[in-house]
Length: 178
Picture (cartoon, rainbow, N blue to C red):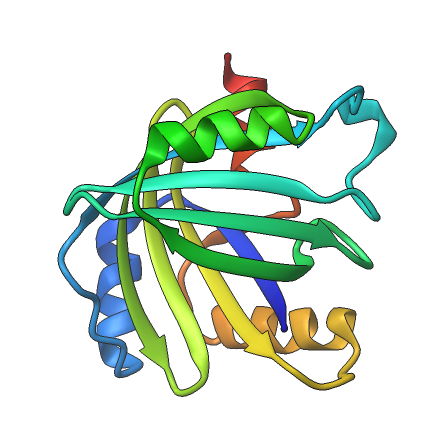
């Protein structure tokens, strides 16, 4: 499976929420997410992300924990992804360290999710980084990732609200704000 995303910094949250509602997107209540990001031992941001597998350990406010690996392909917003629920966050953290990964940054956000057909829609308030709209499409075929990102961008622009597209992931944005 590949997850293909586009991400936008939001200047007018209320305008975005109204536009999403008008587009038929029903957002759920905010969910608190605390993520610990991990990089392969020795990896540095100047090396780029493509071809390197990164890990994330996420805790949700309901107490669930989710472990994810992402391997960026054409760019950091197109990734081969594997994800599973884990029972014990501390044990999973220790296992990730034992596999040679290094903790990089902690990402804390409140996420509201919805859908527009097959497109996952997330509105994220990210501590120390701002508010973002993230569009996600999970595919299992050979469509061109850049073409899918262009389609997602067209959908976002059709909302008619001011959005600033970014190609940075949340770990990069949070690291830059520190």
